[in-house]
Structure formats: structure tokens, C-alpha cells
Length: 301
Image (cartoon, rainbow, N blue to C red; front, side, top):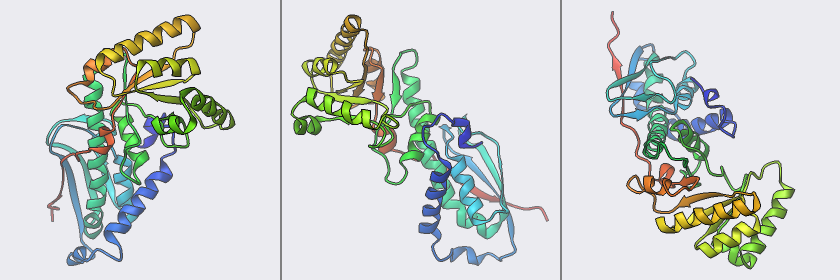
């Protein structure tokens, strides 16, 4: 399974996978794996990878690339596919190849699979928690440096969506932008001018608001999205009502996104207020890697 199976991801990943893997192998192997030299050069081995806990599997293309870069003769037989939900002690794959190459690639390959499966699994947990509502779980730019697109891809594999990928593909007007521009209305007008100059890549204009009065001003200014920053549930419901009233009068309906302090304990209630999206920085910032194990098997004589 490759990233082509998640072709709706709005960024080409093949070059990104190559870049990620090259950096990982360079930092881990460097001038050469000294410990692997303990094993005779002609030895071949079979290794298995087992998952020790429930998980959504993600990162297979990165895992495959790690071993392919070290030795093209390595064969990996996958028993699962990208995006599969698996239980504890599931056999994920069997790897055949030169013993030294398997040992040298083990850590980098597992790091990608553990990390991205951790992101996908956490995203899936939030998505499942709000099932039946209209809200969508999305990520933020709070990602591990250098792994932005890998992590955002993993959120999609887990059933979530992406906020803007980076500063270059959408406009998010936050408090400091509003202060520097002289208010919400002038900031939105300036953003609309910038967006028109970059229509090929600017997907939306979003305004962060901290009160219902700011929400009303942003609606009137023509924002596409409104980010409800740390609104409580009552304020969110009020914000939805104001948005719906504005839509009924004008025929234009901005989307509302809740953000700030979202947890598994609170996300369902937030979704039930009627907001369209819920952004959660912890999907990619506070990641716990999935517990995986790679072990060599005896090769029959």
C-alpha cells in the first residue's frame, strides 16, 4: 500500500518521504553502523514486526523506503494495509534480507511507523468520539519540525482532516495580525486583497475571534472561516446561532471552528454545539508512539 491510496492529500508526498528517510538514515547510520559489523557480511535473516497495542497503522511507505535505501534486495511482506485498525499482538509484516541491512534500518523504519501510527490512532480516537455529529476533527501547524506533511498525512489516515498545511496555502488572521492591521475589518479587507493576488494557492481566509462581537464583525467583513478561540460551550452555541442568522439574511455561511483546550472528555460536547470543525494541536504535538517490536526469526537450515 502506498500514499496513492490516500490521494486526496493536498501535497505530493513521494519527494517528502524520500527527504524524511534520507535525513533519518543520515543521522542514525552516518559513516556506518558499527554494531552491525558484528554480524558476518553474508548472513541473511527474516524479521517480523508485531504491534503490542490497538492501533491505526500508518507510515508503511516511510518504513519501506528506509529498507529500500539501505539494500534494494530486501523484501517486505505486509500482512496489513495503510489505515488498518489492528489489535494487540498483530503481525504487521515479515522482512527478508541481509542481516546487516535489517539491523541498520530497524530503528529509523520503526520510528516512522510508530510515530505516524501514533498520530493516526489518536486522530481516529477523536473522530470516533464525535461520530454522528457534523463536526470534523482537524490538525494544526503544531507539528514536529521537518515532519509536518508526514504528520498531517497521518491525521488523514486516522479519519481526520487538515487545517492549512502551512503559511503559504491559506490566511489565518490572529490577534497580533488584527492589532497590527488596525482591527478585524481592515485585516480582512487586506487579506482579501492578498488572496486575490495568490488565488492559485490561498484556499481560505480565517479570522480568530474571542467574542461574539468580534464574530459578528468578522462575518460582516466577509471571512470564510471563523476560529472560535477558547469559547465556552454557551458561547459556541451563541456563535452558531449568530452565524446561522447571518446566513439566513445574506445567503453566505462562514464555517466555524472551535479551538483551545480540546480533550477527549470535552470534544463530544463541543461537536454537539453545531460547529463545523474542531482543531486539536495535540494530534501532532503531544504524540505517543505506538509500541512495536521487530524480532529476528530462526532460518531453517
